[in-house]
Image (cartoon, rainbow, N blue to C red; front, side):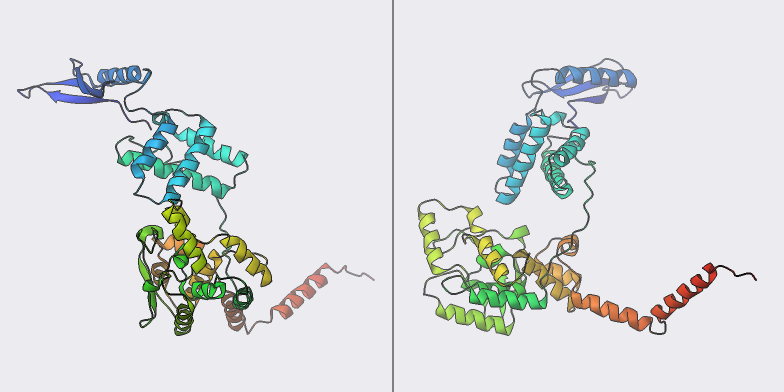
Length: 407
């Protein structure tokens, strides 16, 4: 809903015996103004307020008005440095799609129906319901910040119905797939400086994301206490700037076996290389790009070229048809939950800000839980032979249906 440009003020007289209605507004020069209506009729005052506001809105440029493209640029400028670059890109992408569907209208004129039409436009252009839902949520956050800045009074996307999205099946790797994946990664090491096998083992052990793993430095690992700290990085001579997802700094335990593998890996590394999983040749290349000013915070999220393509090659070599690196995180979290960690503990270890994120996107039902549930059902109904029961029932129905024979 557009911000109200004209307000009513019920101003009392000096002696307090009567009052008069005034109009309060901001003129085209941005100055606060007031105008006396000279009466005390509430209905008449409201009609005059609405008429006066309509007159302001009919001007070529309203006080504080901006086209959506200008509103986007203004919002990105204001929030830069407060949110991650990925979030800024999401704001820009969603708004540009919205402008394409509705036109570059004044942001003060955006209403609920624009949001509903945008959802339908997304679906008509082949977007999935989940994509349309995400775009609306992004625009809602963008306009909510405008409310917090006092630019709007109501969020036009606040009550837009989001497309219903069926809950997707969470992909986790089975124990056998994990073994095959690690073996394929080990065999892929020949001619590759990237320790894919150790990277996969560490991911399954810690539940760290790709960006977190690739930005671990040797200083982050406490070999004596067997923990790794997920910490942001400053732009220094040895490290590049990197931010943690949701700004959740945390410490994650390592098993003794993984600690031993990491210690062996450190002993094999040349002196002076800061990062655990960034190969020396790649580290030297990144340092060269940084000196030339050709490096960015965005690139620091995944400082390794062709990462996804190489991981897909390992999946293929392991005989696994589908999957992604992030599924290692889902596998780790589901294993923690299946082996006794509470949901709250899993959430904190994963660095999530809410239970809903952990529950919806990361906790899957393991095959062994399905088997244990199957055994429990059989044990509970052990006194019933379902097969015999169905056979008896079927036989009884056959007798009922048999035609009678008369002599």
